[in-house]
Amino acid sequence: MRHPRQHFPFATYEYKKSDPGVTPHDCTQYHFYYVHSGQCDYRQGEHTVRWGRGDMIITNGITPYSPKAEPGWDCVQTRFSFDPQLAHVFDPYFCTDSPLKPFTELRNHQIRLSEEQVADCENILLRINHFYEEEEKAYYNRFLMAFYDLLMFISNLCKETMESNPKISAEKERNVQKMIAFIENYYMQDVTLEQMEAELHMSKYYLTRMFREMTGMTIFDYLRHRRIKQAKLLFYYRKDSTVTDVCYQVGYNNLAHFSRVFKKQVGMSPDQYRREQSATS
Image 1 (cartoon, rainbow, N blue to C red):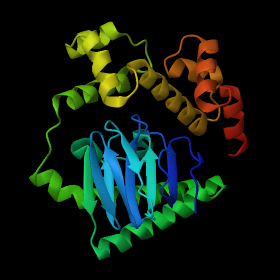
Image 2 (cartoon, rainbow, N blue to C red):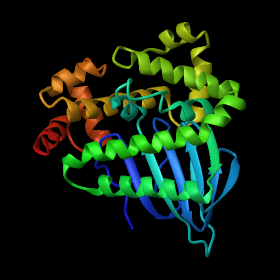
Image 3 (cartoon, rainbow, N blue to C red):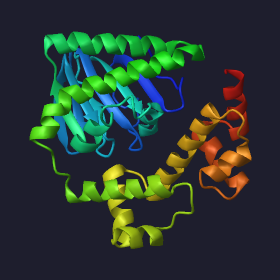
Image 4 (cartoon, rainbow, N blue to C red):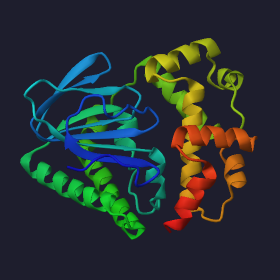
């Protein structure tokens, strides 16, 4: 069985038997789940969903999912979590529509695949699994193409649902989406609750309480994760960037503070991470 790893700085992939609690939920990422065999219960917020072979679930990450395996169950599944920024590497002329549209419009959506769709899906996942596990970065582009194929597969599955029965977000989730969009637009600058309060026309006390209630993390925890993920992407793509360059580009004004936050989240200093990325080019 494959085990989770951080081969790329923006995606975590695993193909394995259910193991409750081993994969922390991350509301800063989008998530894809697929059951190859067996069955398993997953807790979605306050609800429990029964999964079986050929079931797929996509989520925008706001509503936490957690596995709940029962004794004697033997569920084999794929879990794929990725930073939405990963989809931005695709040329817009290559994309007929936003490849993330099912995640943003449907938010949390379960699909039961036909036998033909199961074969197609598992063929794509087999390629993703192979390219993700390869050590050579030459496989990176092939991984991206397989990932894009998966997004297009999901988009085709969800097209009719998005057109005929679009889901309306609940007020709290809609507001959290606005907050995340605000952070996405301004994370490279100083971000304050007062700015968010003025922009979104909601009390900062309501914003902080609601964001934590819906995502399980504070606004500034989310902001730190977003900045460090962007820093990792910059180190990965722009080999000539210095740590100081990246520090300022992701919204930090103090290099020492940036280094402390980066090391706490990644497990190594930004300079170590930068050298590691350069060495594997």
